[in-house]
Length: 184
Image (tube, rainbow, N blue to C red; front, side, top):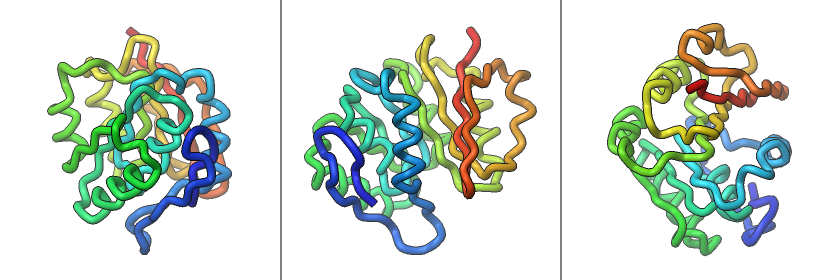
């Protein structure tokens, strides 16, 4: 896995071995950032369930003002820190270790995020839990976007009840990206 574009272009990133972390493939990451390209420069980026940190690091490399990484696992959080140090992007990053629901509450009152990316473990209904919290939160910026990486057949029929508008739904072979806007 590597950084695709920007100041850290082509730099390799470390990943965790095993099935607990599913790194987003370079091709899927490239498609994601092609869709987000005009929103990233100067943005505040929140990478929930960050894994190796590759998505937030890509955002920083492409000009995000700052990125906040949220990861529960201690070893994986250490890996994010190593990747940020190696890519020399650590100065614009904030790494928070803990459960996403707890960290989101800790972030309340901070400046809103322009892009919130979440890639929770598949098939554990964490998407619904996190989106429910964000629907009532001040963390998404008024014109911000939330991107959910999920299994292709994940049920999102509840989004309208939570006040979300689906902007785009991109399905890949092993995953999908759902682009949402919170309706204020």
